[in-house]
Length: 248
Image (cartoon, rainbow, N blue to C red; front, side):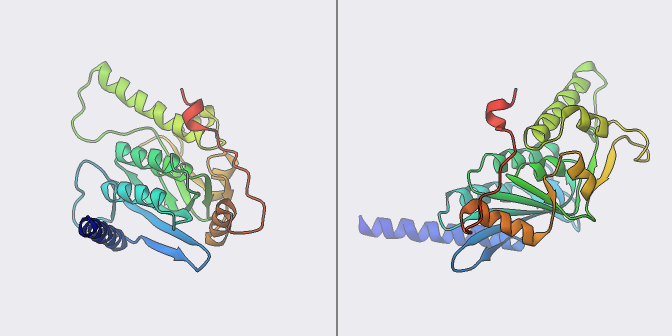
């Protein structure tokens, strides 16, 4: 029995080591010191979902991130999660799946938009308990797009409309943004060539209520320390709505 337990423990340690190595290849890391330990996950390039992207294209593979989020949630040695976003968007369902996983975590989570948090990167940024953006970063808010063959029937347009509603509901449930504001930003015809939508800068994202505040990595780590109780400062107020109780 003892041998079986030792063998099982060894297998679990090897699996954990392999998982961390896979994440490290994608840019993930662990930051901290003797008193605290925060996991850092980058969401960069395109979010790869059901289809493999061409070689040479920077991508975040959601099937690698999903098990890591479970690992972080269950690991007593990890005090919080820092998401670093510089993404152009990508697979809508895969991005929304990641956002739902992050939003359902009990561990302290903070997102920081660097460079860009475009398209499906918007709900990903709002999924954390606190969201930050640097002043020079931008976010693109636009309607759901579909590539490939689309059958021109009412069901196709209904599907796109319902998917867009789910994204707007998610953003508003995890931020202080109002649905009418997000929809207005999505449908603006005067900013993006050959498309509709809005490109907003860091301070504008805060003004519209999509992101909590402008800040950098120092502020992000400070918030994680406060939420995890690793500092004597009062914990920051969480102004987010309870998504799983209020969402309809």
